Length: 333
Image 1: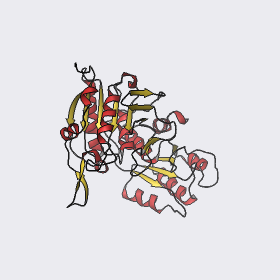
Image 2: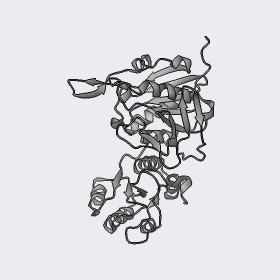
Image 3: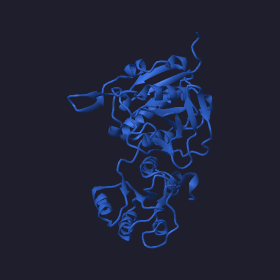
Image 4: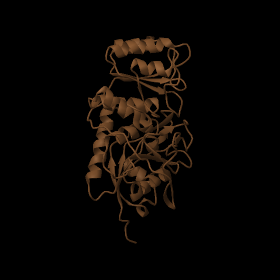
């Protein structure tokens, strides 16, 4: 049987898919190399020719910005190879919604980039890693996913990097797009595309602002955490407000002090879907945040807004440019 014409680079970085139970450590630990993971994923040769690139076994919660830029460089190198049709990145799911957006903002090639991983370790019965990897390779080899940016593939769902969110700590279908829904689905019978992504955010930079802080608003909150972050040194602040963009007046007052020092502040919602806005004008309401100078982040979640702000600041964008990057298609600069 002749080999499939598609050729897919698979970049292994670690994650649950690479882990096994260690009785001495008392839990799952990094164990499997990229070659080991491939050996546990039969049938890949019937989907595409796979070029493995092993970058180690890093738990996703340990990633740093320099490491994410290194992976971005590896993706670009693979995309620049005319013999490569698409790229898969294998990683842990803990921060997959952040890393996928990180690369989505930076990369500009039309070749598909698919991020995948596993919710169950290689020691668990019916672990989902091999099936997710096959699905991801199938999507990376799919011409219909060209120019759709970075997507996340898990449990047969194809989700865009700017919307996908981890909604459950352990469920196999934990990754979902709660605003616009998945782009499609994938299985042994192929890739089914339900919709197109359309407009995408983009920023060109090789560095990110390291000290962008993320703060979650809650009941009975004052501004002390903001003041402490400013005192410790802060490049930017993302506030996950309650509901449609509302916080205590004290939190807003502290943010105003930060903005007076030139620190950019972004307002989003702590809700898993939807957007902060200007519907409420009481002190601490979304309208008062925007009037004070805070930028809205469209439907980006707090962690995603932090990634966008960090990269935008790294690129040296002006406030107007930052606002446009953050707001996306859902906002007005």
